[in-house]
Length: 477
Ligand code: ADP
Ligand code: ASP
Ligand code: MG
Image 1 (tube, protein in one colour):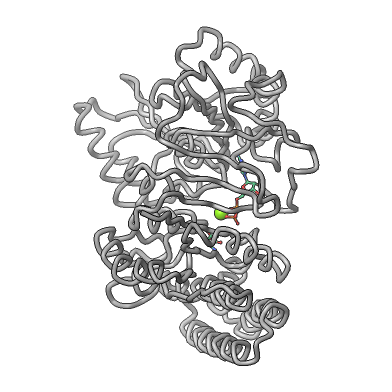
Image 2 (tube, rainbow, N blue to C red; image 1 turned 90 degrees about the horizontal axis):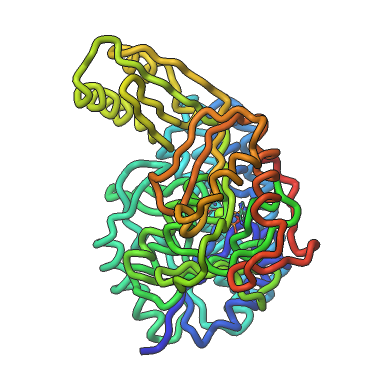
């Protein structure tokens, strides 16, 4: 059977015409592998669309329109530069003008109602991926590639949980088989959108911020492709966030579990849901740098060689968390106490990042923004709560870490002098997590990185980067 691959390009790879021309070049070079292309919105587009929606809801439709217009102009500048064929240019220009009009009508409606519902926000968001994917498809055609724009509305069926929808996999698979596979078999390069889905009502949904990686994995798993490629702006998964550690190394290969732990505990490089569909079908994920496309990237696979020994591979962190410590007021049976806690968390849709229990207390680490009055009141019905806010999680991810006799002492030595509120060791085979004060989290990431990665690292697993390879974007963390 001929190869088939998914190639997903993030917003960092498509911020302007030059970056988009580069994407086109990369896709063209992979033509013989039958790519299905998944595109995110251009850099900052999703934030701008969200801002426009919020401005409208605040009763500032003029400012909302200005924001939309400046995004429209960015798209148009790319169109003018990349699409010279007259008819193609007119077609795309019309599509973009129609979208802008639709958005302006939405702004009008939201400004009257003074409310931006999750469903309407998803309609705003959709414009980003729809425009960028149209532009890439047209630029590919201009380059002589037989590309076809495919609306994800035709296959990415989800539940109606707007802004964080989940796919209905059976239906997605059937639709992709029906619509996208035949295109690939005819030699067409389908170009579609990440992030977007559609509810059974026909309204557009989105699957959570940064979820285009997840879309790529869903599509790749459903079509049982040979490789899922995530193209971004760094050489692969690094030993730490390059915005915090100036000299990280590249990690050549990771297991799905390691990648999942990293993503779950904050490494922005991959959306945490990305690993699951690929893992289920045992499809490797490769992360490549669109600015250095000849580099080997990072491979995420289910069958890593087992002879790498004990290794810390990367450090992730997550900020703005709250530690809740609950003590039952009466001596409830443990079951009833747990059941109450979990039913309250479910009621408010709160996910715990770490949990721990002793005879006397239950400790939960949750996202700070989830700690709302209703949650605290409901939990307070069965016990007393101590709330410790402004916390963060440091997560050390690696392999066979539990076989090491000195890894824990190295870890604690590196962070000594800083208070640690909670430790999770043993819950996962691939990670060890520490809850610390948010304010010192960058310092501690640097200290841990120095401890585990400054010395010469195993060349089978890590690769040194030239210092200037790591771009440090001016994005506040
Ligand atoms: P895209 O637009 O391609 O989806 P993202 O900004 O979502 O790109 O993800 C890539 C960014 O993730 C990198 O530029 C880097 O700053 C950040 N990042 C955080 N942790 C890591 C890590 N451990 N390895 C590599 N990149 C990381
Ligand atoms: N454009 C979307 C976002 O910014 C999805 C993505 O980039 O993956 O959240
Ligand atoms: Mg991303």
